[in-house]
Length: 108
Image (cartoon, rainbow, N blue to C red):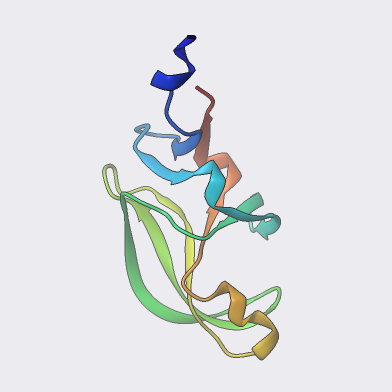
């Protein structure tokens, strides 16, 4: 038997403090854009704190969102969709977008 049984799932961590924030298997879409470049939509995130909810005009319309902060160092990593006002965007509700340059792919 190899070491593969000891290796956990592939995950992403905060680029500043390496706090694990999302599992690779929870990626819903990789084609998202933020002001700073590519971003990934995750069905779940972990070890993060959400900021206050606010309405924000994004590329796909008006959404109620909250900034997602690393639970360890406080760095803003992206945002969470709290509410989508358009029916075609409802699938995003409750999901988090993490900016690619703010997270590190921890390949184990």
